[in-house]
Length: 460
Ligand code: DMJ
Image: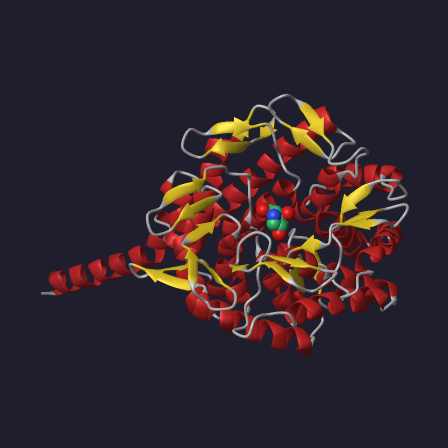
């Protein structure tokens, strides 16, 4: 009896000790996740270095690396250092001090906007103005802000149209503008950068012009609250009435929401609230229980196409940021399916058949970006493990000896000789931030512009 009692006590003690020790011997899923996070954080940084070092070797001082021919591409007749300006804040966030310092030195000694050169206002705003503003906020080096203000002044002539909506191109020296047929993305995605420039310089003109432009566009929405794809900024008349959330419209919606949050602006909030309601009513489409967003006529809401693509995949991030997590998660599931279907996402599919309309993959970030937002808002491990898949498939399909290459066809994996600057600004940044500890970046204190340049809500 005494023996059996002591046996029971002994085995109880053994079980108790096992319970204490077990978690150490067999780490549970969340411990495993932490070590995976560290591993992936490190690996993403290494892939960033692989891209940057090859840019340095073959494209130094130019806009972008051509990773297959080992040479460079400049957008215009002279370089605007697109890759260093786009990549600088990613280096700072990744703690790559030496690389950030060399990029900074290059930008501050070589970048000039005093050029007799015509540029596309939207692209230069989101990449260069956005990059310089975040560089200033992160480094507090006034020279970045001076460059940004100089560029902002050179861009101002775009707003001199009868409606206040911007022309697409401007000559940086002469101020001559061209292209009056523009689209909501190019018209409406200037407010975060111009508004931040106003905040940081104390000159209200930039924000006033950009806000007037987007308001003029919003006021031309149809009676059911949708916008079309192309509009004449001289006459204010639509020239293409196809409505969707894809390229040419996408970041118009993104900036309505983000401007309301960055500047605590109720006008933008009203515009976002009304717009997202119409988008959810007329463009959202459920197929076999999956949520997608298609194309419709802006006046009638009648469906015009069941297409969705790599650019549309930005929308779960906006839905999440706007507080509609349920819809965001549903749409993110569809985006993830689109990514996996061919091993990596194509530019556009027909979501009813999953057949491909445009087979390219341009190293785009949007799918990965939305996954990052959903991870931040839900903390569900599923999004971490999806981020691992995004990263592994990206490395497997697009890594080449001298950088990363876009794909001409996601089925054959045939490559294109291009590594867009947003690959360093966005794709790798969102992957890195998904795996990095919260302490690396204050998610709630910033708003990302559409090129993933973080702008502080309360910069002091
Ligand atoms: C980037 O320049 C921006 O994210 C823009 O809003 C859309 N296109 C590319 C990335 O795909």
